[in-house]
Amino acid sequence: MTNRPADKDPRDGKEAQFAGMRCVALCGGVGGAKLAVGLDALLVPENLTIITNTGDDFVHLGLHISPDLDTVMYSLAGLANPDTGWGRAGESWRFMSALRALGGEDWFQLGDLDLATHIERSRRLAAGESLSAVTRDLGARLGVAPALVPMSDAPVRTIVDTPDGALAFQHYFVRDKCAPAVTGFRFAGAETAQPAPGALAALGDPALDAIIICPSNPFVSIDPILAVPGMREAIAAAPAPVIAVSPIVGGQAIKGPTAKMMRELGVPGDALAIADHYAGLLDGFVLDATDQPLARQIRDRELQCLVSDTLMTGYEEKLALARAVLQFVQQMQQKAT
Ligand code: FO1
Image 1: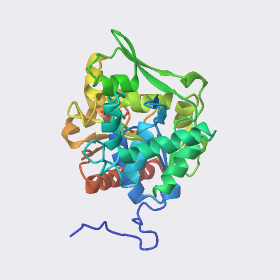
Image 2 (image 1 turned 135 degrees about the vertical axis):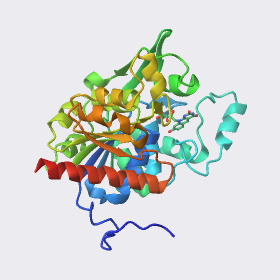
Image 3 (image 1 turned 120 degrees about the vertical axis):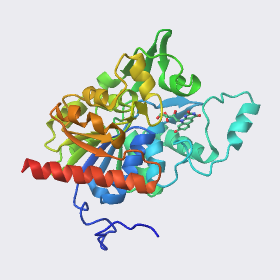
Image 4 (image 1 turned 60 degrees about the vertical axis):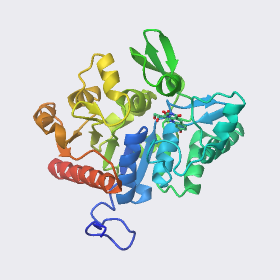
């Protein structure tokens, strides 16, 4: 028995309570993509813009690879590999095994289905199309309805500084398995980049109800987006409330190296430090139920605080968190009137 949400509006298959709401989500990889799936289920497509990190992008084997764009695209298309959080479900690895047999680089796994995305994106970028245009069209072909927008069409590459020197992001994250201690991050190219078409318009939309910072790694998934000139200003200037969902639960990252990075940067490894990381931008913050004891300290920071289950193991949890966040927005709007 699926617990169908109440008040389903038969007209567009969305719950009537949220159908008119308009949001922009800032998103990185796995955690962000999960909340994006929940928001996509509740909002009509033209009311959801997902601005996604491209700091993880790199050229590998001659192919332009955009991991976070692909994680969000595959997740919204229902094609994401549920085990890894990246690449496609039902993947096969014949290309990789053939490449390995030829002595090719095999530290970055490219599945046979996933490879099609990289080859087609690379072909179209080489033909002069923008990353935005290619992202929009590939997404449409896979059935993605909301606007999937890269943070910039210009290359912005996350560089991880370590005691032994600088590392390109994928070398740090995949080749070296996040083992090196981080001392800082840089976003090469950010100074000359500009937000992708549509990003500023979406953030500046007077009808916007909320800007949602998804539960992604603040350092390497959200900060690259904020580093694009004009982005932070547009978010700060937006009349809509800005809400962040903590990617840290009980002092642990739900997935990935966030907690390890916080330790290495000498930042307290709790949800409060995430709220402080976005200081000046936020109106609301979502804590996991585990961190309910921190709610008072969040409110002491002049932030509205929602305590909710933020672990999104299955579809229902993604839907439930998205519903809780949108209801939180509605409560904030009622308070503001
Ligand atoms: N992450 C890994 O840990 N190992 C991989 O072999 C790997 C391959 C890969 C291929 C395509 C793609 O879009 C993502 C891939 N990722 C892999 C994830 C990637 O490193 C992302 O940047 C992280 O998920 C951080 O968002």
